[in-house]
Image (cartoon, rainbow, N blue to C red; front, side, top):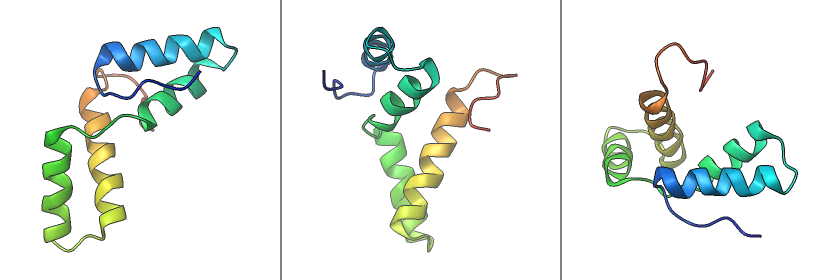
Length: 81
């Protein structure tokens, strides 16, 4: 079944749950579901800011996504390492 588009926690959680129930490992399901998220307006603004400062578009997207992931991770977790 295809993943549902969206960036809300409910959508991402539903996608992960669906993939785990279909036999994918938990970590793989989480990685794929998070990779399918659409960037938030804040992330899009950060990407534009990075491109204006001289980053290539691809590097800007990767850096903005990493910053977003690190901001969402609970303190003390190893998410993003």
